Image 1 (cartoon, rainbow, N blue to C red):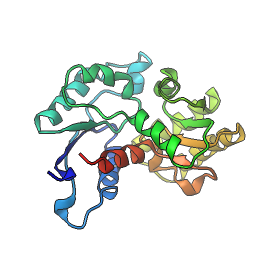
Image 2: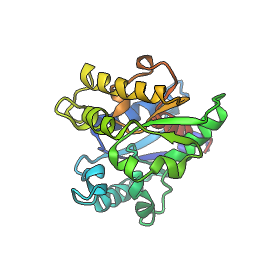
Image 3: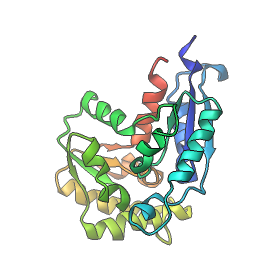
Amino acid sequence: MNHHQKVIGVVGGMGPEATASFFYKLIRSTEAKKDQDHYRIVIDNNPKIPDRTKAILGQGESPLPALIETAKNVERAGADVIAVPCITSNYFLAEVQKEVKTPIANVFEALEQYLKTDGFNVRKVGILCTTGTRKMGLFQKNLPFDICYPSEQSQESKVMEAIYGAEGIKQGNTGIVPKCLLQEAALELIDAGVDVIISGCTEIELALKQEDVEIPLIDPMQVLAQSLTNSKN
């Protein structure tokens, strides 16, 4: 059996553009000379999953039932491994894993391996992410580096504004407004002496690109896509 027999399931819709971007990353990171060399990928793009950050902050319903239902859906469709292109959802994934047999790929493990192997000399890591991810300490709990965030004021007025604001990425804007807000937050992290910045929310990489910051900008979903497509199984 060649390694492209593995079926990748994607629990998507958080948000839809981030899922489309992840799908593209999976394709681009697969070595293929023809269609048949690619992985079979089953995506349930379910934008009806309740907002993860709101739930964590106690302002909305839990996404857990919808996450479980969506994961079971891709499992039934034949997925051998499940990927979830939404960082904040990791807060709920241990509970989702109890309800499905298919392993859910761990983005933090992939990220740690990448940061430890790739010629980086990483001590201090800057994180741009949702307030839900930040409040739950997902990066501190899962990465063995010194973790640094923008100030709490910048977290709301820059990072969350870029993601959720009137001209934000969730509204379908990936242009200059969210880019500038995220650039300002990134500069704050660079001033704090971080070695790399992680786009710790799947929306961020839609607006903020490597050429917008002068230190390595790492997209966890690109790292996850590579780890899923390079493994020989």
